[in-house]
Image (tube, rainbow, N blue to C red; front, side):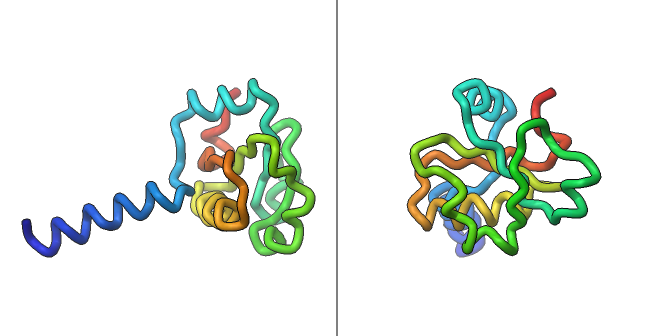
Length: 112
């Protein structure tokens, strides 16, 4: 195996271990049906322009100081505009002890 191949495999494994990668829409739908809390990590201006029904706006920049607003005993579905900020939020929440957190991707990826 080349060093490049080993590096690529390492990146894939780390992404999966750390969580945060966008999940399939069927998983998002299942979490929503089971009563997951929906958290929009976009800015307040983006949130005001349109959000997923029932979502709570906790911008990524505020997440660490507002974690107390998110219960640890309930599934959490995160989204943003593209999935990048929600990926960061999912990793941060898992490191903070949240076990059932998924990144749904962008608002357009949320089920209708």
